[in-house]
Image 1 (cartoon, rainbow, N blue to C red):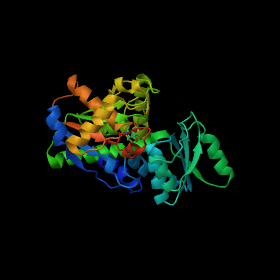
Image 2 (cartoon, rainbow, N blue to C red; image 1 turned 90 degrees about the vertical axis):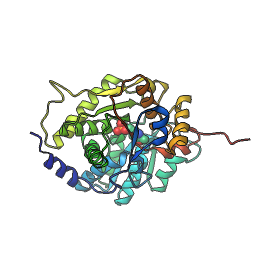
Image 3 (tube, rainbow, N blue to C red; image 1 turned 120 degrees about the vertical axis):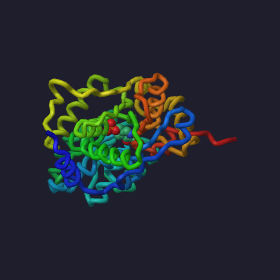
Image 4 (cartoon, protein in one colour; image 1 turned 180 degrees about the vertical axis):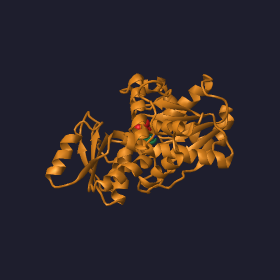
Length: 339
Ligand SMILES: *Cc1c(COP(=O)(O)O)cnc(C)c1O
């Protein structure tokens, strides 16, 4: 038997409160009119410090664990324009923790957008070339230990069972907002990459017995959909075991994971013309800013699912996971000045 009170209590106590929660739940009148379906938006781009975004919620749990283990230094990894690294650098600074970032991709000529913010937050950068998912983190960990530090490793994307707790908690928060605003969406659509956002939400659905369907729009072609489903199942079992819930996720009857993978084939951090059009459309319809790597693809995915009639009846909840600083990286997004 799940004890929801015990779960809620664990979710409230095993974190360090740094975010601006609950995040707003807003109706999108413009897109709803154009696409002829009621669309609501969960604004996790407004989750508080460091320009917000979905990693903030995971970091409340991960950095609490780091503090419990008396760490003084945080290590994490990502691409040059990683939102996760920017939020980790910001939240680590708030707690007085040193932050080391392993950043892959090509070293840019200028510090733009997320990289500029990493430097503003005082992070130390280690360039890792083609490797952007923490492949060399163990070596850095050892180096920092040898230098007398107490480092804590935050996984790529903040995605482990503990990070996912942030989104189990977010699911409960959303249910409360649905009840108080008396709206009843049939589906949630969000960008999914390292997986803990999706896994945390699905864990929330499982522990509450909710029937809403959750659709993940895949972003990164390095991640094959089958592996991704297995990965999400394993994150969920980790999360549920932290919550003291015994369910059979690995064996027997794993919960369905709805992933839509068509759009990721364009490449990671490659902005297609259609994605650019969705950024313009959403900005002009609702003054809602999407980011060029994740949420533009996710919103385009929502539209595809709508046109293919793959979404259940009722309003749709688009989960905005943040990332807008990347709009200010000219390599990712630009509009030529009118001549
Ligand atoms: C990291 C990120 C995601 C993906 O979340 P995962 O938990 O890694 O699947 C989506 N949107 C934005 C803006 C992100 O930075």
